[in-house]
Image (cartoon, rainbow, N blue to C red; front, side):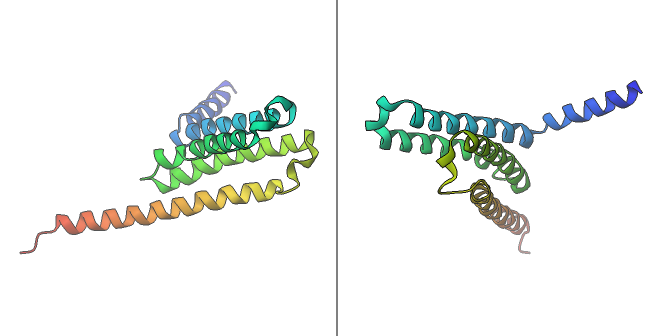
Length: 149
């Protein structure tokens, strides 16, 4: 019985050793913290209301940079890019859903499903472009390696 629990524990640890999973979790946690902070500051700090535009631009920019981490890290590996990005975006979507419980009007413009689909489509497009770029790069590399005799 202890051998079974040890092997399943090793399996869970092995998943966390995967670079795409780690990157996705770190990205998702950072996106979630940024988004939660953004919502809390927007709703609970009325002194910053005159700076609402700057606050919104800064928070959206920080989240966009954080969302690009899987893209920059796994651009040459589209499958890892997609899995890492979707894992991170799923964590952000979960945070959005939890915050919708406390802040009733948060999901007035976009539902939780729409937020998930927006991020998923963006990561799918980028992963597809990375995949096409990888195919082109490999085709050119094999063409260059052949000599014309």
